[in-house]
Amino acid sequence: MKNIIIKIILITVISIVCIYPFNTNALDNYMTNTTGENSLYSAYNYVIDNYDVELIVNENNTFDLTEKITVYYNVPKHGILRNIPLANTIKRLDGTTTRNRALISNLSVNDEYVSSRNNGNYVIKIGSNNNTFTGKKNYVIKYTYNIGEDPLDGVDELYYNLIGSEWDTVIKNIF
Image (cartoon, rainbow, N blue to C red; front, side, top):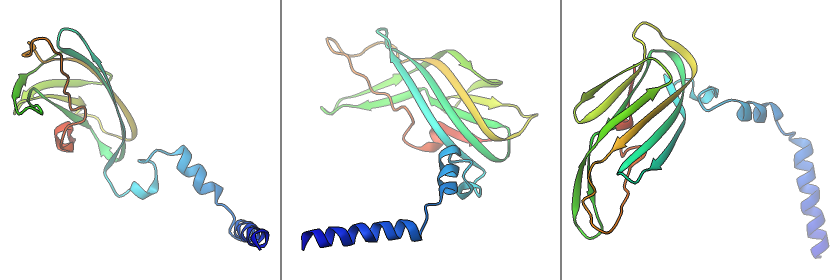
């Protein structure tokens, strides 16, 4: 009886595969296109396909960060605004808090940019007011994030929210 059930299941699976052939074009399209290039997302002005952050923790309370952001623009856009918070409040499990004020240095960007400070953020405007583009665009942002003096004796701690608690704090606007 057990062998008959197994044979029926195999015959059913083989029949389904033969009757409903696998759509390899759909798979090829899915595997070669990024999310932004997929027609399912064409109604959006842009899609952030990838956000990769590399963080190196240094002994002097600084972090060296490299952010790689891939954006797919469905309509003409100038670029992005990257907001980096300059003040952070850390709540520990024991109930104590620390407030850090950070400094940004060693900034490099793989595209035209200007930087400024606004509402407690370090703002990097990447792109040009004079040029727009569509399609896939890769951004690489490198900087050192300095949190200042270590308030704790005898221990080290690390808290760094890589992406931010709200998307608007990370990539404020596509302009």
